[in-house]
Image (cartoon, rainbow, N blue to C red; front, side, top):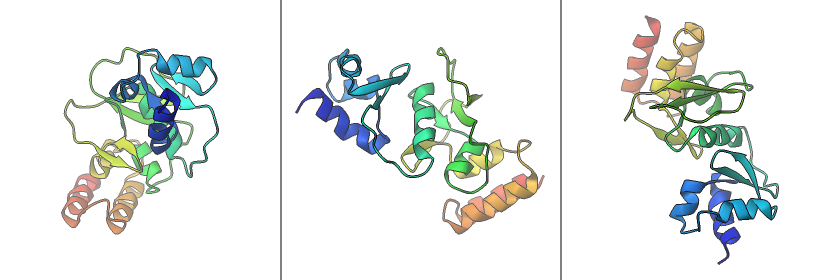
Length: 178
């Protein structure tokens, strides 16, 4: 299997994205991604982040969210409003993607990405292939940024769609009503 085939097989399950960390896990040489980008097989889209150069159709807005998380770093998670937007629980500003990151961010992020401090070791989950903050935590992170009525409606939708258990929904509803 060639380096490109290995990268392609892995990236196709990650919205066409591959990181240098993931390439190392796949057993590729440290400069393999840069060489593939030089040959036009990959596109460099951020520090240690590459995307397949051949257009691959992915539905919805998840690829934009996945790219933003990858551009911030391997420990980054989709945060607050953007979690709600990804899951279709509440309308959000598509021009601004919110990312949580624990620790000191030592890289420049593209315009349109808002980085928020996250607690080290905070709970994370995967929604639509994107590493994210759990819905209950995302709802609480949105207090003050979204209207309380909108947050309560999002919590109700999250419960109806199975993103929150009944106990989590009641806890979130009490917290959001304050």
